[in-house]
Image (cartoon, rainbow, N blue to C red; front, side, top):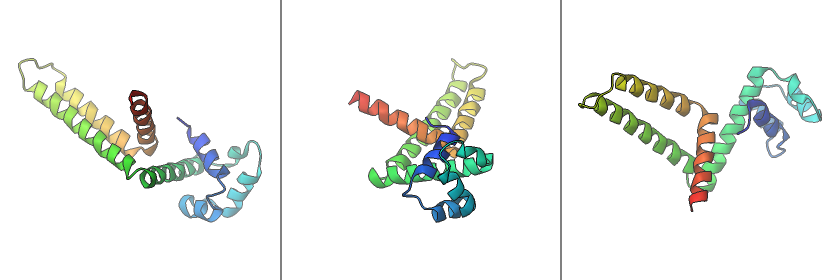
Length: 142
């Protein structure tokens, strides 16, 4: 699991990604991108937080595109499967609430699961971390 700064740094080190592509996606000037790429150390200190986040977002998009192109849309299939799992977990909590084994907080748990779903689905970094964890566990059990 890489941090925002580590992802931004990795993207800037990748010569297969052009300065123009980075500028177009992140709105960081070509001059600044070139300056950061030329500096051997402490280059990330030149970036604002919002620039580092934009670079991280581009890094995540490239990762997702690579996974999907290489593995028959595997990442998107994983996201759909996670969404199904969250929906199932929420339905289970709602069913518990309506049963004689109900706990007073069953609906609160359902709300928390929904919020966790919203957070994870909207955050590419979290979903990539979950995907890589899933893939690692799948390979270990094979």
